[in-house]
Amino acid sequence: MENLDGVWRAVYEPETSGQGFVVLRQGRILGCDEGWFIEGSYEVVKAGRLTGRIRVSRYNDAGESIFGSFGPVDLRSYSLALEGRIAGRTIEIEAFVIGKPGLSPRIRLEKVLPRS
Image (cartoon, rainbow, N blue to C red):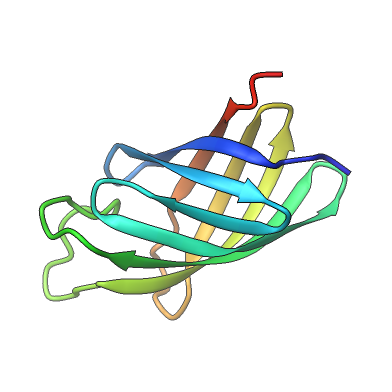
């Protein structure tokens, strides 16, 4: 199985562009961007495939959500189910907001550290 431990740059698509950083280590995910903390877990379910779940919580009202303007909906905290495809130093993730059909961001992780 792939060793995913390290620091990854997270690029959010397509609703709004944005990025943050996450640390993957022994099945755990921790990270943040300019307005949100990210915490959760993942597992490599078979070669080249990853699943997981994260909790995303706002800590700074200055940053915009990856979903853009919510209108009447205010997601200050939410959970995402993750399904990803691992390709070397990149992971392409399809995410699903639990309990909010239609909110399905794509996230591309690019490994930053370690460099080898």
